[in-house]
Length: 187
Image 1: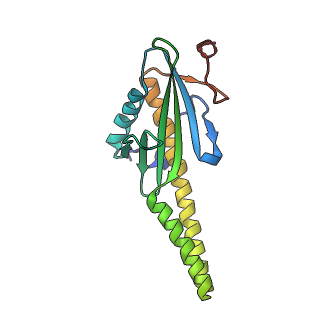
Image 2: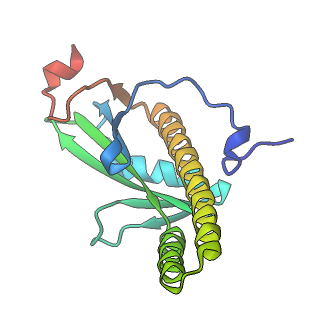
Image 3: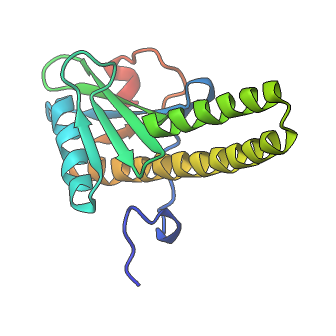
């Protein structure tokens, strides 16, 4: 049986190359990479797209008005918003910061709103059986959405690890989110 990036249960993930900073409240993780080859964020984004397109991932590119650079969808329940920031440190030295925020798709959001609306209407109409069915169905759907989001986050992390190795970006092991000086990065 062949494995694909859409079958997250079949993927043998590599051990993490470096630990991402996880912002649980934002449902996001952040990674930092150093280069002295003058690579800009567009190169990293293009490599991510080139890697994922053969696997039939739907990718939306920011038109200039969004808070993200790429929006990557996996299935109907989950998506990830990727934002890359490039810090210039003189000459060809760059620090690329990648932020990946896991989000529910619009369909998933509409489903959760529909379950909530159904529960409220059933409570108003005095239909406890319908409330029970809606709560159980909603809980199952929440479980599926969480599973899909977690799987997509793992896939995007692995894709970033593969792509950054390919274009020779060095991972930065940083515990704070403030900008680093070049001497701090090189030590």
